[in-house]
Structure formats: C-alpha cells, structure tokens
Amino acid sequence: MVQNSSPSARGANAQQLNKIGRGRIGWGFIAMMVILLIIAGRLVLVQGLDVGNMAQAAENQRKVVQTLPAVRGKIVDVKGKVLAESIIRYNITVSQINFAQYPEFKRVDIDPKTGEGIIDPATGQWKVESFTADEGIEQLSQLLKLPFDDVKKSVTGDKVHNFVAMDVSPQVEQQVAALRVPGIYSEVVTKRVYPMGAVGGPIVGFLDKQGKALAGIEQTMDAKLTGKDGSRTYQAGKNGIIIPTAPVRTVPAVDGQTVKLTIDQDIQFYAQQAAQQQKEQYKAEWVSITVVEAKTGKAVAIADSDSYDPNNVGASDPSDIGSRSISSVVEPGSTSKIMTAAALVQEGLATPLSEYLVPPTLTIDGQNFSDSFTHGTEKRTLSGIITDSMNTGTVMAGSKLSLQQRYDYMRKFGVGEKTGIALPGESPGILAKWQNWDGRQQYTVLFGQGVAQTPLQTTMVFQTIANNGVRLKPAIIDSFTHADGTVETVPQAPGVKVISPETAKDARDMLEGVVTMTDYKVVDIPGYRTGGKTGTAEAPADNGVGFDGYTTSFIGMAPMDDPRYVVGITVQRPQGNVYGITQGYTFNQVMGQVLRSNDVPPSTTPPVKLPKFYK
Image 1: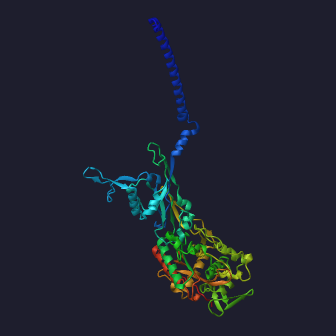
Image 2 (image 1 turned 45 degrees about the horizontal axis):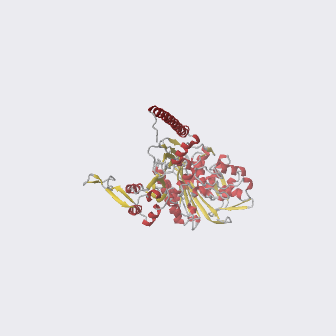
Image 3 (image 1 turned 45 degrees about the vertical axis):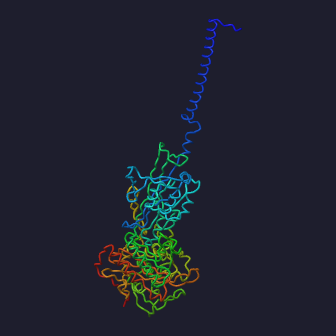
C-alpha cells in the first residue's frame, strides 16, 4: 500500500528539485560561455592576430599575378619611317578543367556585323542558342583554321592552362571571344615586325623566337627598346574564376623607347639597290656602300648587297647576317695614298706642287715597286702622283716620313681601331706596330697594302679630309623618345683633329684632280664639284695563305667647295679584268641621289685643276 505524502512534503521536494535544476542550468550556462569564449578567442587569434600568418597564407594561395608586357619600342629612320615595331597578337588558351564541366553550353546569338546580341522578336528577349562541346570545338577549328582533332586534343584533359592557337590577330581573337565557349580564354602578346623588310636589315637586326635580340640596333639598343613589364594581381578560386570582392592591384607597364636612327630609309634603299647591281654586274662576292655626313659623322646609309629581311632571317645565308661595312676587313689599296699625301703636307715635307722625278720602276732597300700603267721617267707633282695613283711616286714621296710618322698618321686617321659606331660586330681592322713591319711592309703601307680596314673606316678617313681635318665618330643614333613623349637627343661626340684645315684643303684639291685632270669623268655630277680616289688591292685568300682575287673601291665627296657628304664603295673579288672595273658610275648615282634628296645647293666656284707635271 502506497502512502501518499503530505502537501507540505511535496512542496519541499519541488523546491529541492527546482534548486537542483537551477544549479544545472547555471553550470550549463557557464560551460556554454566558456566554449563561446574559447571560440571567440580562437577567432581573434585567427582573424585578428593571425598567428602563423594563416590568413596571409590563404590569400597567397588564391593570389594570381598576371604580367602586363611592355611593348617594345620602335626603330625609325631619320624621317620617322618605321623600320621595326611590335604589334598586338593573341594566344588562344584553354582551361581544360573548366571546358570539361560543360558538355553543353548556351550563348546569346551575336550579330556578326555589329557584334551585339540578337533580340528574338517573338519573345523580346535575347536569342539564346545551345551547343554541344563538339560543336564549340568545330566552331573554334573553323575560326582558327585548325583541324578539328587538333583543337579537340588541345581542349581535352586536366590542365589548368593549355595553348589552343598562338599568334592570332585581334580580329580573330574577337571572333573567338564571341563564341563564348566555356574554358576558352586569350592572352595578349606582342610580335616584332619589320615593315621595310630587307631595307636596312643588317642595321636594324632582329629578335629570335624567344624575343632575344641577336643583331643590329635591336641588340645594341636592347635596354632602351625593352621597357619594363607591369603586373596585375588578383585573387581567384580553385576553378580559376576571379573573386569579384577581392582587390585588384595593377602596376602599369612602361613601354620601351623609340630609337630614331640617322639612317635615311630612301637613301638606304637606293644604296642597297646600287650595291646589289654592282655585285651582279661584276659577279662579286659582296659590295658595300656607305654614306656619311661630312660635318656630323652621321651615317645616312650603310648598305650591303644581299641584305637580309628580318621578317624571315632563316631564308638568308648566315654569312649575310650583320653588316660587312663594319665587320669585313680588306686592304684599302690606293685610297690610302691621300693619307700619305696629307701627312707629308702636314709635316711640311711637301706641298701639292712638290716635284718628283718618277722612274717607271723603283727599287728601294731591295724592294721593287711599279705602277698599274706603263710610263717612262716623268716629272710629276705630288698632286699628279695622287691623280694617276702612282705607287712609285708615293713611295718616293712617302719615304720622307719616318716609320713612326707613317704609323702615327694612320692611327690618327682611325686605322687599326674601331670607329665606335653603335652596331655589333665591328672590327678594328689590322695595323701592325711599326716596329714589326718588314722591309717591304714599311713602304706598302704608304699605298694601302699590308694594312686592313673596314669599308666604314676608309670612308671615315675621307670624312676627316672633308671636315677640315677633324675626324668624327660615325653616329647612327639620332635620338630616343621615352614612353611619356620626352625626346632625348644624342649629342655629337667630340672630334679628333688629325690635320689642319689648310692641309685638308690641299688634300681635297688633290682629290678633285682625280676628276678634273683625268678622263675619269664618270664621277662628275652636273652642277656639283666632286672629288675622290680609286683603290685596288689583292684580297687575302680565305684560308689565310696567299691572295685570291682583288678588292676595288672608290671613295668620294661632294660638293668640293663645301663638302657635305662622303660616299664609299667597296667591291670584294669582282670577276674579270680588274682594271676595267669601276665604281665611278655607282658613286655618281648614289651621290647624286643624296645631294638632290637633301636639296644641297650646286657649286658656285670653278673646280680646282692642279697640274700633274712640272716643267
């Protein structure tokens, strides 16, 4: 039998139970608060204090840095005509992972004429089309003009980034973007092009497929042309999609500088054509034509036969890469006789009218010398010796110079050292120390044998005479234009005084005699006084043993009353009778073009006619 408790007992029990419940609730509340405090503290550590840089590490995992390539600077001629520039191209890429997620996709139908979406007149909404992945691949293959199987292979797989097509035009890239195939993207790249092709090719140079500068101005001015890449930094999820709420930091690219040359593209083209014609006419190994401004040393043209096209370097012979005008060394021959004559006049050992009794052959220190034409013993002036290019007379007159003087004047005229022109591959030429000259070389250097120069070096000898005896460093860079439009003009390098203005005038008068006192009228340009010197020398064999053929040349200047330009022509190993080969006609054509193109006023004074003989 169950005994019922009294009301008072039940009340006491209820109070006790309520007390216990309140205690349990209190302890639960306390426990809950402790847990919340622990969680909050952990959050403070992670989000506030970031112990261990965990937040930064997470951000770094999402961070993507995209390079914004700087556009390589242009190379332009003296008149601003573009010789080299970089154009925008695109590489079409794919995220194979993203592409695989869309066996079917939809896109708004695009009007190909306007590039805008098409409205469905029945619904008033965008007209949407559905495509399978294979249909998207087919459309890509048609636009990119690639086989279907090749495109499918490119987009299939598990790569985050893969190439579908490279070097795509902006027009094609826009068409690809309009397809809106999932996972297909594009990245901008630049491509180097040379609008003038082979005109000035060895001067301009080229880049290889990796963008490395390998020749010409592209190589020597690479630091100026390259610029500085920028960057775009953003955060992306695992699927490569940009997180829209994350900040994007952009450092803009600084494009490369424009390099303006002293080269005149029109004159360069004309000179190259003339060089090629000379090569073909005489079946020569190569021909070089250089044109410089007498008073500034600026190169107007440095032309070589078989000039290569930088757009297609692989189609050219490797031996044609680079400019022979600055890299090939040849004996200058009789063009050097004007240096000997100038040294004699400068040292007070002769004048243009000094008299020499010149025999048909000359023997000195056991060495025999003769001339290219038959003659008896003649009463010659120094000018007459230079006019008819007599080896015998040059040795007779030049022997008054000590060996040291002969060497020193050649060095002063720039023989045996690089000119310093801003092009790669320049040779210093060959000039042995005078102490090492043998019994014959000490005399042959007086008429340009036993010494070797580049065509440009020989041209600069005549520039010195044209410029009143001051030798200048040949310049090929006119200025730099920075990305902000600032123009930095390259100052003219200081010159070197080699001979006095009076001696230079005497030398010019003797050079003019080559035109006025002989039948070599082919170099005579109507309206302009001209002067110059021919040269012929044996060409050393390629194996270094003996000689093989000849090197012929003509270096001249105009107008003689106030020389503005010097033109040098060198022909290596022409075929046929060497004494029937002439560069006079080519000089006439090139110099005439230069004078007319630059509006040089005709001569206003009569030509100088120094006598070749004395009584």
